[in-house]
Image (cartoon, rainbow, N blue to C red; front, side):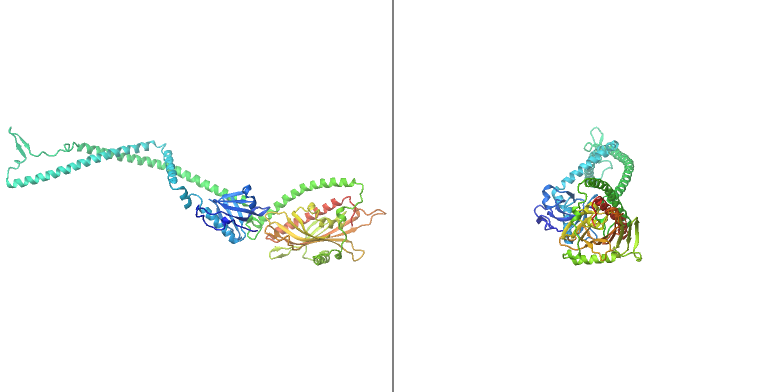
Length: 611
């Protein structure tokens, strides 16, 4: 996987002209699903939005998905230094960069875009201004106040009364202030007058009341200085104003008491409503958290954190159950496909039996010549010869005396043995199966097992298959990927496949054919991070046993029996639990042998015998 950033995203900074973070674009691996796994996608970070395209050339056709980063949560993976996850609510993107440096660059750029988004950022405040928030707040407050007091008419009336009392009280305070100012002026004048009178009395002593009255011509007396009248000062009725002031303050106090009483009652009512709303909110939040947890389990169950790996979140029992469920689904599909295949074979057989040349050889079978080691020369010839010799020496040995071999399956003529072997925690159990099939020869069985033209007709576990190189007419290098069984990682294998006739050492030896498949390396099929590369060393050895026919009859398929010995040494790689690997092997190998031998019997039925 390679990653390249666009020129606009080469620097993690803010554009000085627009004040916005710069655009970033490049190739990231995105987790698609558990079938296709990680896929390279062109990812673009622009305007607080993360979008992805199938490739850079397809940007003009529109993005395949996008995320708004305002509320996104960016989580660097705990163990994978190149991976980071972006989640928005229940949507999660699993992304992998080319290396930790590129991951850091992407995370910092995303965080920068996220920080500059929404109303909480400095850029946003400069862009929108503060008056919008004030206007919104005022509108919200006005709407709240109106809705709150629709049912509170009495409180509004009392508040209106208090406004009236306040106006009256202000006028009364002004009036009283004027009166007090007048009183202060009168007191000052009287003080000056009394001082002048005292000075005169000291010079001209008189009777105590002589100076206080003026004698008129008619003999009556009047005071020289009449006392100031409260009502006479600027026409203010002090007594009336005082009574009114007292009444106003009493009214204010009464209204305030009434308001406080109403507020207390409304406070109790609102408190009860608030308690109910808080309780309702608590229940909703609990339900939301529970639903989100369940949703995360369901929606992300199948994500990269739950697939096979050293830090997988799925335990061994869940792993086993998931594999079993996936294999059961495959079995149902195979059953449906098997019925279709049976109908097709039946139709083909009918046409064949009606042909005018019943003894002609199949073209595909006739293309396989009898070969020996000297006839099959290529750069891997020495390895092939070594593998053939080892299998002929050890694979045909009887296992009765070896206590390490365990009989795990016995169904009729078929027996499957296993020897438990682990290396560095990886299951490397050798498997050996023996089977006897009537009506077919060893040559026919090995041909259909080796021939790449018919491989997909009987092998249902293969997803992709291609011949990397043809070494000779009887040896090829094959690359194939197997269908993924979630949560196990997808496996691929690169192997050399050779077919060989084993020359008999004496006339009593049965006719023997062998196909050996063993892992090799090739520049055209290098390992990738999408699949776990498995290593194999497999052989199918087929011996043809012929029982003499009665009288002068020709040998028919009723007189032949093929004894099959199948050995498999497989290193699956990865981190699948040992119990799961052994259970799958125990389940799938017998099915494979029965499926393959049934296919060979159907293909050879009614055809000439090929020894």
